[in-house]
Length: 140
Ligand SMILES: [Fe+2]
Image (cartoon, rainbow, N blue to C red; front, side, top):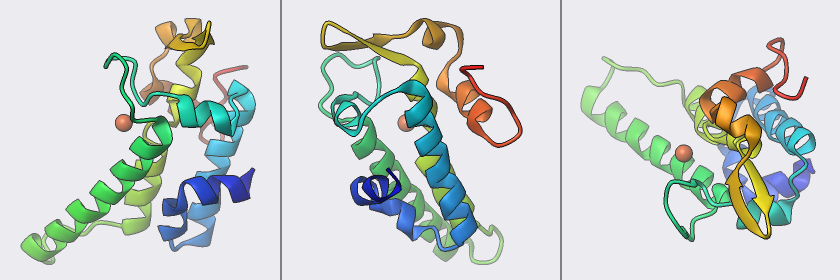
């Protein structure tokens, strides 16, 4: 599972600290296991349910957000010099995890992704916190 995640979201490899990289990937692995989604599901999963028939899936969106975050950090670095320091690994980990909780927000009904019962109760910014170590699990 780890190798496939690295293959479809190579931005994980941009996290230089091996422990942060490993933990970030582990959150995705745990989310996939607990939610039951496959890699094929992720390739079909829209990044949002708020836009009807979006062609951008959650993988493409996560990758784009990570790359945008890096570009923004680079501009900040050039424009603000030493006034604002961005920890690149934290930034990337946050970008890679920012929507992972959506795996619990969705369910598939007749081939269509819709809001799950869990998703109606708990949006992804909160369910993501529950995936972090020592904070519990949205499925428990
Ligand atoms: Fe997002």
